[in-house]
Length: 219
View 1 (cartoon, helix red, strand yellow):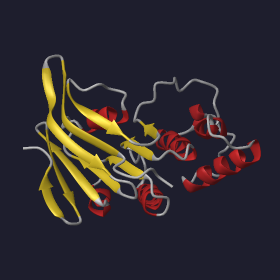
View 2 (view 1 turned 120 degrees about the horizontal axis):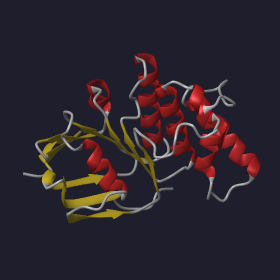
View 3 (view 1 turned 45 degrees about the vertical axis):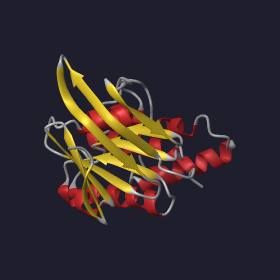
């Protein structure tokens, strides 16, 4: 069961690059059992906000409180694509640190590989995969960790419409069935429209919309 209370609470976040502030006084909250979409045009700060919430960047001002374990899926992983890793190796890394036996870990890995539509490619090297397939392998790795909070930056990038729809349904299932707090930056308005909560970024400010109506997150 996820911990009680908000998964992530961020207040007054400000961040900038080379003296230019890209996020201004942004306050957002991620809840367990909820799928939150971060939307906005290119350069609006979606990726930056995801990284701030995950803790891989430190805000210039403001604070982020996290309650639970976090798994992050980025668009451009730091690990070189030339590493001799297979799909199975990559997804197995998500189980590292979990207190489960080898047999259970193998079951989780197989389940997640199938969930993202990569079954049959378990032994394929990452170098042999398309960009969309590598992204799915990283998503499977994140889900295999069984983290309380899953944050993603464009996990559906490079996927065809059928694969994209499948990933969207998988993320919704993780939130609604498993109670995970899922936060996802996306350009796909069809996905954004199905999210439980939408944080729209524009000119460094954010407005949050939910099923109970819109409210300003920052002004």
